[in-house]
Each structure stands twice: as C-alpha cells, then as structure tokens.
Length: 132
Image 1 (cartoon, rainbow, N blue to C red):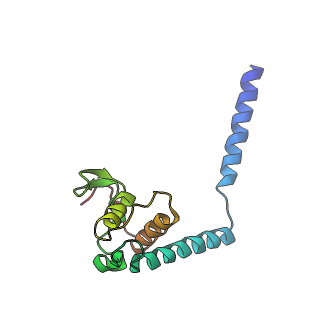
Image 2: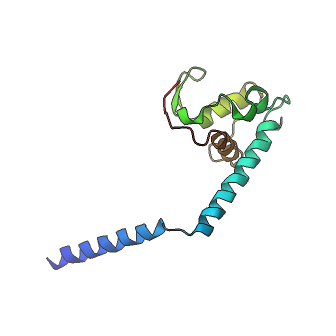
Image 3: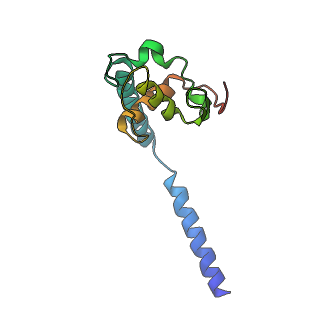
C-alpha cells in the first residue's frame, strides 16, 4: 500500500509540474507572437524572391499572397505526388518543378519561414484536413 501511495504522489507531482509548463505571461505571449511574425516575414521575403530556384521564378508569381495554397487542408491527397502529403512536400514539389530548385528539409529554417508565411496568410480559416 505504501508503494502505491508513493507512486500516486509522484504521479500528482508530475501532473502538477506539467500544468505549470503551460502557464505563461502576457509578455511571453507577445514575445512568441513577435518571433512568429518575424519568421513569417522572412517567409514572405523568400516567397516573393527568386532565391529558392535557379530560374528566377518566385512562388508569388503563381501564388500572390500565398493564394490557392490552402494550408488548412493538409495533409491531403496531392495529384502531383500521387499520395497523401504534408504541405512542406508540396512546397518542395513547387521548388523542384516551377522554380527548378533543390528540396528543403522539413526542418530547414527556410521551410519553416515559408510555412509560417503561408499559414499566416490563411489565419482564421477553419482547419479542413483532406479537403479539396
């Protein structure tokens, strides 16, 4: 019985600690938002430049203001890839094909910036994974 009580107390202590991890101040939230907006602005700069490819084509030429990218619908079946894909995979398809560039790793800071910009442009839109 004593062992059970010790385990139970330890469990409560861990739960209590994880609850504290979710608490943050208004200053924290403001700092997090500013960091996101900075990365999204970096994404817009990449989106509107020809720097991602080799032919000078920019993402914005086909998708001004990230139009018709619909990040809220991913993951979904992508005809170009022939399977269900994540948004970053479709971004790489566009980089490889229309832009004639090289894939970015999913965790590349440039990919994070691009995805941040795309989702920022669609803020407020309801999630609808798999939709077309």
